[in-house]
Image (cartoon, rainbow, N blue to C red; front, side, top):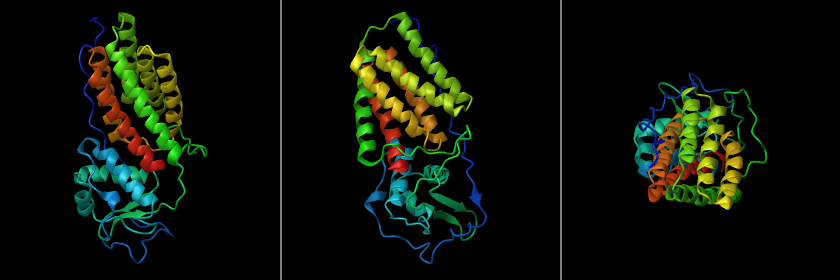
Length: 284
C-alpha cells in the first residue's frame, strides 16, 4: 500500500447541542386544541427504530406521523417517556429528534408546566432560514415515489462505487486525491460552513465514484449528488446527523484505502440509509 494513507483516523466530534427556539407561550393561532395531551392509540408508524439509525430513524418516524395526520395540527406529541419507549430510543435521542422537527417548522416547544411539543405542521413545507440567509424552498424538489426512487438508486450506485474503488489498486496520486477530498470536507465541518460542507460532501462521493473505474457509475453518482445537494439544502442542518456522516465518511475512506471492499460497501449503505431517513421524513 502507498504511504498516502491518513496518518491517523480522525475522531468524529460530539454533536453540539441544538439551540432552536423554545417558547414561553404558545403563538397566537397555534394554541393546543381541546384534545391536546391525550394519549393517542398506538400506531405502526411508532414502532422501535433500528439502534444503528436511532437519530435519523426517530426523525423519520415522527415527521412521517405528523405529515400523515397521526399527530394533527394543534395536537401535542405524547410525553417524552412514552414516545421514547414506543420508539425504543434514549430520551436524549428523542430530544435531538424533536429539536430537528422544530428546525423544520413542524412543532413548537413550550417549557415548564403545561408545556410540551405542539404540532404546527399544516401540510405545507415551511421555509427554513439557513446560514446563507436563504429562506426559500425549491418547489420542484422530488417527493413521494420520485424521491424514494432517487434514494433507492443512490443506495445502489454509491455503495457499489465504494466497493469497486476498494478493490482497485489505486495509485499514489489517486489515494492522495481521496484523502484531500476528505480533508476538505472535515475542514468545512470544523468551520461550520454549511454551504462549503455540502459542496465538499458531494465532491467526496463523486471522487470515490471516479476511483471505481466505472464511467457509468461515476455518471450515476454525479446525477444523484446534483439532486441530493438541492434536497439537503431544503432541510435543516442537523448536528447529530453531521456527526454521524463525518464518522461514516472517515470509515468509507479508510475502507477504500485499506482495500476492504465489503466494509466500504457496508458503511456506504448505512450512510445512504441515514440520509434517506431524514429526507423521507422531512420532505415526504
